[in-house]
Length: 236
Image (cartoon, rainbow, N blue to C red; front, side):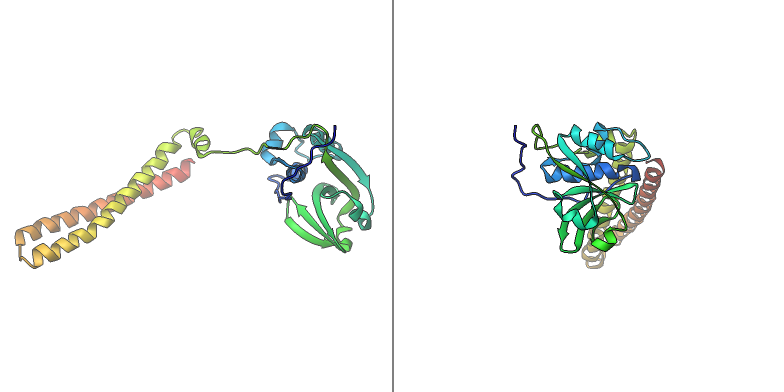
């Protein structure tokens, strides 16, 4: 069976590692995405167990096989990197992996899970490249799909007891303060239209009391919102 070819627009993303031991998974995810298997580090971490000390080249090849990417390890000199099937994985600094995206003359475009996208000269790359590269190509049963882990807000809030209630309190206090703030101009306008123009002293007394109550309520709501925010930060 012929390998399945990704006919969409090929793009090599920069996928960063979340831990130093996950550079191999990040490189594997980048090349998988290039071939049409849209994945990420969390999805691969769920499928494959890795040591806290990182991945060996052999373990990286096993994981590649698990997502139906055929691998070929190659030993070569930096000046021969242009002969590789790109993108490919390079063994870097003895204990790290990076993805070689392009060779542009004497420059290499590297996607480093730790540093991001970098461009190096062949001479500089030779200081880091250990001489081992790993080519990855789709096997016959490779399938194009999207297996990235999608995290919804409900999943995050639903697993934390009290989080939704705490967020709701903060929102209610904020909305109440906003309503009172919007009401202040209306009272000021009433003072001008009804009290000053009509010289209604009885209404003036009522409005003064209302303004005092409004200010007191605003102060209490502001304190309540601050308390809710501090409680939220401490608990979550």
